[in-house]
Each structure stands twice: as structure tokens, then as C-alpha cells.
Length: 270
Image 1 (cartoon, rainbow, N blue to C red):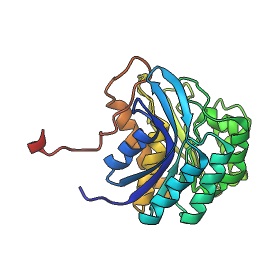
Image 2: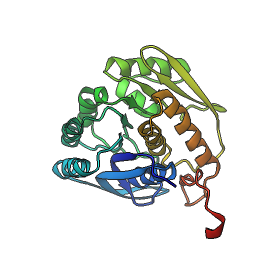
Image 3: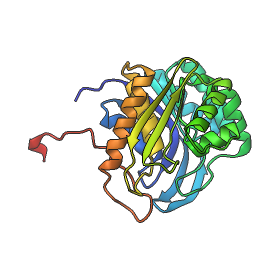
Image 4: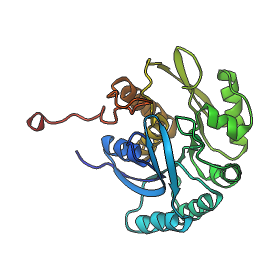
């Protein structure tokens, strides 16, 4: 398989391999691109929850981003877990030096098991300094509620929240609808000129750990290969749906999805 593009991932590590940097690398690789990383935190976790979080210093995060990108310039950047204001400021400073316009921001705030991953001061910094620099922001419903200080109960509320994020400077917003209790999952893409609703079947499974990380990395990968932003969202959603459908059913809690669902192994290696 030929490598199609280069993607820089700025996010936290997940020791269980289902989310964070590990899920990001698997996604970018499975979709045919080259993954580079800047680790923002090291977590000890498994499918049942997060045991501990060790933050990486903001100076070291900046060094990882700048030093890596000087040698291999990324075609797109995916940003995930950022745990403090200083880290956000360092990321802003570093991406300005790279001058990449293809930035996907996944505002990770709460782990699947409920552990909070970011403080209030950092949330304000994210809204004021980072959202406007991203081409796309991909919050789930709890994250969109935190960012917009609204309650989301339906499609109309999702669109309202997306428009509030546009007012904060976001160029494009994809609010993920998996947290709403409907038979069909609706992910809503919004910018100043259009609204697009992506409808997907809901699979009855608890194995959805890392879906947000995976989706944002998939979108970044498709974008890095030259796909338009809305098409990248569509393809990313399709990839995640297939990964959920074929999940390996690992762990006692919220298990991982199947990042290898796109790959065909040559017969002679089976």
C-alpha cells in the first residue's frame, strides 16, 4: 500500500489502545497515511475507566510539534486532549509556526467512563484561542453543551449549538449525535452556508470506546489526501460505523472498535 499523506496527531495516550493517540495512529495507518504524534498526557486506563492521568509539560508538547514538523511537514493536523491553558497556548503557538490550514479539533473533555479530562479555565482558552484556528470542530453532545452552555435534546438543539460555535469563530462544526437515544444516529455538519445531516444505523453494542478520536482522525486523514471537508466527514462517519459494526468485543466495559476494518491482508500472509 502506498502512503497517501502525512497527519500530525496532538493528543493524549490511552494505555488500553482503544482511544487517544493509539486509536489515532491505527486510524491514520488503516486509511493509508503516515501518522506523527505529539503526546499531551499519559493515561492509565482500560475499558472500565481511567485510573490516572499524567500531563506532559506544555514546553515539551510544543517541542514535539515543532521539531517533528520541521523535518516532516504534515498535510493535516488532528488535535485531541489538551488538559490546561498553558498546553492550549503552546499548541496555538506551534501550529501557527507550521501554518497548516487543515486542522481538525476534537474537544475531548470527558472520558467514556465519565472522568473529566480538562478544567474550566482551559475550556475558556479553547473557545477563545483555538476554535477559530481549526477548519473543523467535532464535539459530541456533552462537549457541545459544555462549550455553548446549552442543553441538547434533539436535532434542533444540535443545530442551535453548532451555530453558537460558529459565533465563537468555528469555520465548520460537526456535532456527533450518538448520545441521543434514537434508533438512528444523526451527526450534523454546519457552517455559515449549509446544514448537512448524516444518518446512520445505531448498533446495539457497548463497544464504542474511542469513536470520537477515531472519527476526527479519519476526517483529518481524508482531508489530508485532498478530499473536501464535508466529504471527509461523510467518509469518516462511514469508517467509524464499519469499525463499530465489526468491533472485537474486548474488555469488560466500553470496548474498542475495529480500526482494521478497511484493510485487506494479502492471502499469502494469512
